[in-house]
View (cartoon, helix red, strand yellow):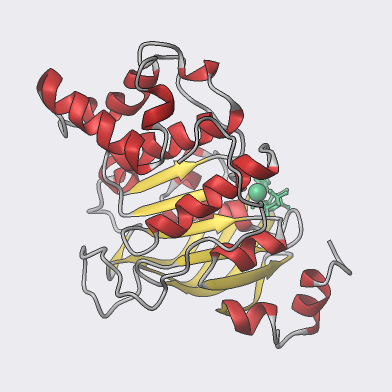
Length: 282
Ligand SMILES: Nc1ncnc2c1ncn2[C@@H]1O[C@H](COP(=O)(O)OP(=O)(O)OP(=O)(O)O)[C@@H](O)[C@H]1O
Ligand SMILES: [Mg+2]
């Protein structure tokens, strides 16, 4: 890989698509979708933000959530790993199954549940620590890496996985915030995968990045396909088409339709989906 964000390939080339390969995420029953929302409703006080959502997220695949601003995409992500719990006045009804188990069941340890998810935000948000500490912090905290050698190996492996190692191996003690935006976002993905999540949630991960940095993130999502179940919110329809196996179109809290990439982008069944992907409604 070239240094920095100086990728020489055009930003619109397709990310590697290996959807035909069997998912490598071996956790949980292989015949079940990784996550299933059944009749999911979310209320922020009086605001009914998600309405009767039934949606399965397949193991090892990339699922794109698309739809106009305010339609409930981020809310859906936050329902999956129970981040909604920390917003006062929020109520969730219905069921979310992860590997067949209800994430909202009383027996679920929420901290443990959240560790099964990596989260990559819209704006790169490295911790105000060194590059090394950004990656090693959570694994050390959760006992996934012991001692200097094991920690260093995990840091290197995680940074190599996101193609950042060659760019940062000599500056591991420098602040993560010193990196370029695209490098920071790859650092955040390295941080997410270092503690071995099963699902990665991306909420508009490229909206703050230039086209070349965006291309590298898309390429990375393609490479992570199969090893992780990935859910990506994006406003960029070309990006959704490049990276996803399946897409779900939300509109004003309703899930209008979902299906394979080709079903949604080539022959959408609903006029609202058609209008949205063609840019007639935003
Ligand atoms: N903490 C909150 N309190 C009250 N209402 C909220 C809260 N968070 C979101 N909402 C409302 O719920 C609806 C869905 O919001 P959400 O953030 O999920 O939309 P979104 O599809 O992610 O939008 P965007 O594309 O702009 O990020 C919106 O009407 C929003 O105003
Ligand atoms: Mg959002």
